Image 1 (cartoon, rainbow, N blue to C red):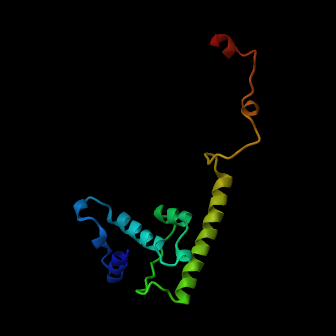
Image 2: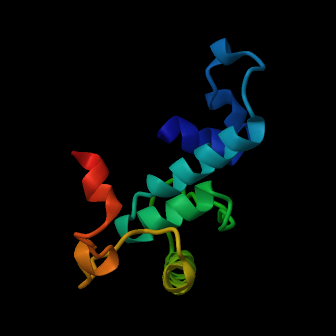
Image 3: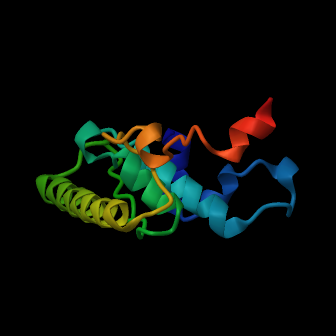
Length: 134
């Protein structure tokens, strides 16, 4: 990762890409993955994004913050606090968004229900289905 951090500081992250790919890749997607990877490998564990934040970034729902690198791998308190606040706000936003989506979603995700299949689909023994089944 030290090489990636060095290339980031020099502004040449594309040097990380395997040359064997040639031109057969989406540069925007690759840069997004690299930037998220840098955030996930932060030396300070509590400054790394949560998995839900990472997913949101990769889906394009969240702006990927600029990775703040310090050659000594130790950030000053202002930088740490700024990153903490950013991720805290993102988690709060995602939590609210998830709650809103779950309460209005009809397609899923599935959750437990006190209703049984018999409640939802009552069986009628006098139905012609049973006669045709034999």
